[in-house]
Amino acid sequence: MELIEDITNRFNFAAMRVPLSGPLPGRLDERKSRYFERILLSSNKIVKPTHPAVVKLNEMLCKVQGARDANAYANLLVERQKNALAFPHGGIYVTTGLAEILDTEEKLLYVLEHECSHLENKRKKLAKAKTLAEYIGSLRLEEYLGDLAAFLRLNREGRNPLEAVSLLEKIRGGNQQDRGDPVHGDTIHRILNLLWVTRLMDLKGIEAKPTPLELDLKSITPESYMRQVPDIKCISDVCADETRQWQAIRECDLYGAIAAYQHLMANYKEFMAGTTGRAMFNDLTRRLMGKFSDAAEPIIGKRTNKEVEEKAYLVAELFCVP
Image 1 (tube, rainbow, N blue to C red):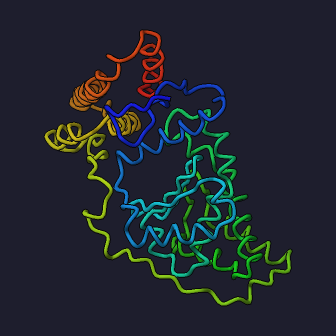
Image 2: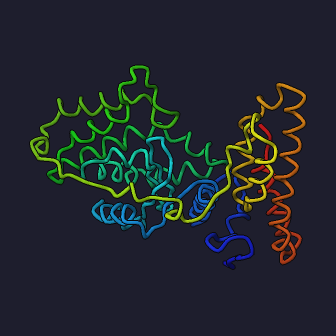
């Protein structure tokens, strides 16, 4: 299928012609997965693949069963929140907040095993999602299975599976009111699930000594990012300076504009609380729509009417008001 390079040099534009509702035949689920990844890349700081910390992530990923079959690869997402996520086509993203507490190889392998364990199931969830947030929010029930699969895998390899419990305790920290997040649920429930397994099974790996790990995170600077991204959160902040918002929109590419619009929709009620907010919301919406039109114009000029209609249908779903 033809690659369209007018908008992006990393994304197969064919994904923009896939309806976002109903089942996706054949390998179209992979194209849609890469489409969601492109939105992530256009709205978040991602560390270059050549950085030593990212190289180490991928070296460890090679030790994970099934990673090669899934064509998996790992990246670092610059974010304070301790989290990781995987796209069905194999892209795994570990936040720098989580990477900071991965002090043993077992902890890192647990994270990577966890993400690889449900890549196939995530493909099924992907077909029904219209936004990145909706896709991530549909995965919570799979997280406990991912925990268990990664936990047992460590034990089978002769590594200490209790490092998984240690990692979850670090994620939870001293917050007794921890409720996790919409995807992973309450962290204490995840810890208890794994501790119950230690009571029910003879886990020989418990006696193994963990292998220390040091990821070179201190050397990550703005020059380490794959690209400079606009301040998406500023665009959707009702209290933000108008000049900063306009500048951020000017810096958006097509996928950044989509990400900004979806953030804006999430804060819809805050903008509607006052007359000034409503006017700001309408202005931001108009500017983002214009950003999309400017980016899409070279593409539409090369398409037949039918293809343009398919593309417009997709965009209408992406830019839907809740």
